[in-house]
Length: 553
Image (cartoon, rainbow, N blue to C red):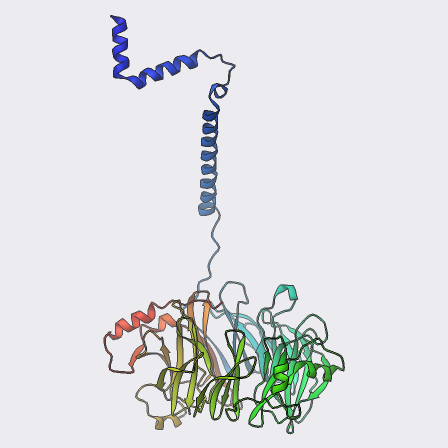
């Protein structure tokens, strides 16, 4: 009867029965015998894998716990929506640049002003650096809050200033801002500290004017650093001087370019790797091979190349480039092409885009009266366009042209004040650009522009809303310089205003102000360019507020 009960229990609870058998089998093992050894090889491998899995899981969780709760995250600097710094009895120079000076991942602001003394933060005078008063000061402001990072006298006066981008560490070249001071001195300033890297005080000549400053020309004195080319005009002749990028000392002798040049120059590299200097001359475009120029200056053979196509296109006597003439050339600039950089020439009669290798015209905008340097941007996604300000400052049209074809994509009359700032743009996340234009406020007639305190309005435009402008601000002060800047990668789009006296002979209030674009939108005014009112003003503002920006590669 007992046997029947056990069999019945085994049928009702089979798993319990098997477990009892396993326990009985294990109990029969000796205490010195390893249980794992008695298991089949597959069972031992499975148990080892389980141990490794849980051990790895524990380590991962421990690392996450340490990183998340024990190690503190680095403090992100708080960036103010708006800041402003003022200088009394000063004069501002037309110069603004940005650089992450204090390494907080936010772009900082570099600018120049002329005064007898610096601010109370540093309390340095012109005499401290051997200059008479007043003199030119360079200053760096924190992009986050406007605090002063450094400030010091750098020159007696400043004629030209240009800053290089950060150089590769392998080249051991430093970032620098090159200043051409009066009379003719050349000074290199470290943008991170304000200290003078080198200074070449002697003037090339008395009766001369600076035409252009070219940074990063090929190394002439073989010291491993790019050099500096300064073009001057003495009487009716253009001369070139080369300065060492490492010491500032003059390399070789001056070279006469033998032409009546005017305006800024351009260093062009052909697709074969040959370097050519281009500058406007006698209502045309003149060119010099940098190889010939260097050899004439130094009396030594240069390793630079010449391009057969360009040698054929440049007249050996007059140095004029045989290309379609757009009239007296006012601006020349590089634009990206499919196989290299092309050349955009802006003349008194037309705009011409030339192929960067064979100088063949790609397109021409005739009857152009461009009075300001064009600005590149994106009207269509990933397609370059160029902003042309055509006409005069009072009777002005903003044109957006497809850079590949020259077709006008958008045009808008927008009257402005003489001397108003250049247009600007910021790349947006949809691979277009947000454009910024200066003009007269809506409702102000051109007859009122003669008043000294006539306001300047800043307008914002995005190609997804082609029939709308957003009036962000009205500024009555004299605007010396303006920049639209992405202060942090993919965020924090803002604009900087440098305002000051109109005349350098009358010192007054100089101000540097930063405004965050998104914070100006809620109080902005929607300007309708047509009859399309499908969206309310608030809906338009909301669309501008939702714009996201991207860092250019």
